[in-house]
Length: 181
Image (spheres, rainbow, N blue to C red):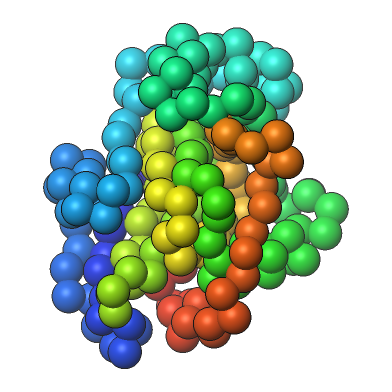
């Protein structure tokens, strides 16, 4: 189930607000220019479908989204307990960073948390199958799929280099581990 918990960045154990209502999540994230929506009207492919099968299934949505954002490419990332170097991969995503393009993800299967750090607040957004999130350029954030990850997600890129992070050096992600599933 999708979720949102908002914290003061100085109080990582006491949420100021929480909800599991997708409409409320989208409403609370909109002032941050974060796009959050549910794509419930398409049947996801089987869990172990290859990249081409996933891209084909979601092509009408991708074409529309890429046209809106000016994105140039899409791929599929799959992370589970059998992923080689998954601990190193998790560490890479857990450090607070920004991007020079919007980070757009659609959750085909599984779940994970995008955690944004904006104006003294931490927004822990629990995304699950059917959720689309777009984190704007320059927004400090990190991502965690947990110690036993199980996520398949579409990634949409504007730049041909793909996922490139500029790490902030802030250790804030270390202060918020209890909220991440």
